[in-house]
Image (tube, rainbow, N blue to C red; front, side, top):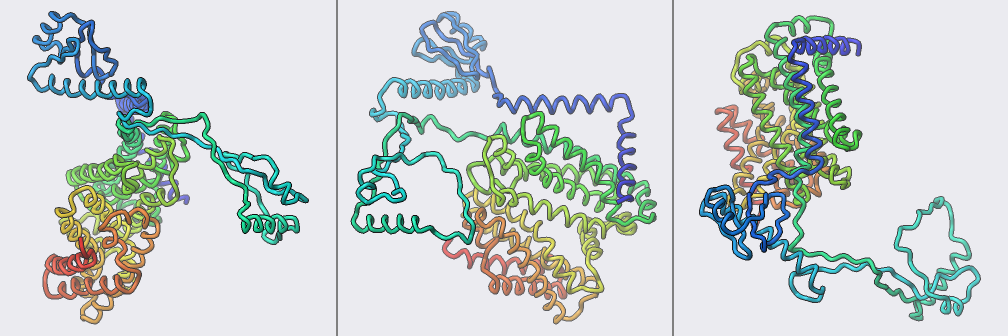
Length: 589
């Protein structure tokens, strides 16, 4: 721990030196102020587009109170003149609407039409009785229940029970009672139960009556629209922005030390690769959590709940930005890949949250939990683990892989990305124990495969199946076959594995490790993925034997072909068989 804190203090000094100029602290303060103002504005649910359309209204025209319209009371001559001069977008002359033929004027007419229709429905609701047929209205009445008699008290006769006055059943929940496991019913309780059984046999149980109260609610479906989570999603995204900026600083610092070979000097010190990575990452991780807590305070959210929601997302982002400098050598490549990673991560986090309340697949993003937090809605442990567990597991995997990749020869080599990934897999595996390494590798990559398949599932459920079915099955098959066979292919390339018997045994171990990880993650998501017709194929194609045999066959095909041809051709062959198997499982779709 001492070495980790020493490296962390050194990293803090490096960060401070970057902001030693006169303009840098001011820039940071301006950025934080902008974030705070944005969070406060969106917390107040401000509407974008106030005063978008300019409307003129005659003195006898309707009153316009929508914030999208900037309304002016004008006589007919002035209104028509200003409309022709493009000073107005539309003019309301009594019951007539006058507009131009250009695009903005026609958009203004459409928005005005929807606004007036809503006003008319509200007027009808306030004017006409509930018995009128239009618009459709639903009256909800709240009832209280009463019984003809109370439960028999101790010593009460059956005649006393039948003559007792009605008693209301409380509508509020009663305080829970506790009893020890060894407690037994008393003699009085047994007598009461026997008396109730006798009354049930004679048909003399107390009658329950429901009385209407004065509380009622009128619901008009035509006036009800599902609440759009746009404002809450923007507020939730404000948490991700500082984490992304801070993680970019982490990547830049790591890359700078790598290029200047200070990282090589640090690796020669009596510290482990794990201590180096944790020590360099620790200050940035703490800054990210502090930013999350600050935004929660500014927006009036619960700080512990916000930290619980966004800590896994922050770890996921740091996992991605740890891999970038380890795989690339130049700042140019790192900048490009960092921007690509930021774009994909942002899309993964934001787009599912926009469907909050519509589909349970929205829970694949932790921002959906933040939307529910700002709406005052609760969520369970399963909804929390669904996005959070894969992100934490990917972070742990990246930390393990990073400690294996922190090798001077690997870090300073100029090679294509595919070659670097193959070398990274070779470094991760224990060549002295290839069989255990293959099984462990297939098990560890499950969170990555799981998240990619969730994206495939989300896309397939929002597009016509006849167009996306084949593409979704093929994409899922490719991801799984690469994940299961990559380790074996690397061992074949380095001549650690040679015989077909070894390949078959390794294929079985890879299939077994993959199946164990797949079933473990399925426990936290079964209720969510079950709502899609493709989920049974992508996640739950059987209990144990059938998927184990299928994974073994597909992986064996890929690896045996890799011995005789290129790996890409072998993947295509294994994908074709896997996709055909998935089509067979889907059946009648």
